[in-house]
Image 1: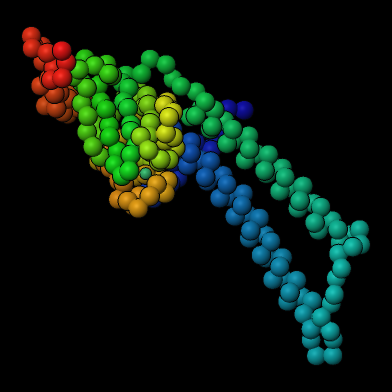
Image 2: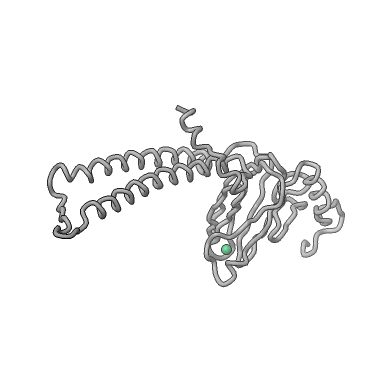
Length: 247
Ligand SMILES: [Cu+2]
């Protein structure tokens, strides 16, 4: 059975749009399935539509046929395709449920890193763990519109918003998750491709929504370690004097 579902882990789209996370191909497979099923019925319906228009059209000396569709043998033209469409609907629901469970309802344990993503009108703030690998410690690295992660590592993200609804969208990873004020939403990803990619807010969030874009840098281990070393705030260095504002 699992072999059957593997069919829908599609990398057909790879030449068109980059596949950059462990589950991107699963989302693509689902889209391919919907495209094939809906596309098939679209073409079949259009074919019959135009065929009947031509076949039963008015001709010299003959009026166009009027078919009420009430007779039993004509009703079959509706009932049989209807049942077929329902069967394909069930297939789409089953496959999408599996993808939903894998990506949204399952949180793989023991992440290699945790980042916090905060949406606000109209920028993204990213909180990365510093040298100690722990979030919410003194050496955390805060950036605006600039996310840095290490390739092939399991990340959890904690998504928050300070004002209105936003949506954290990273197309290359096939992530799109709403950020809701007052809530912390946890999700996960595992990047599989190094490079620099787009991050975009995908929820109309006010006047500046269109410019609420950011970039993510997926780096190999060495490049990521040197980025962390270069950006760990000085305040994190051991010091005997208290931080400003602390009595
Ligand atoms: Cu936004």
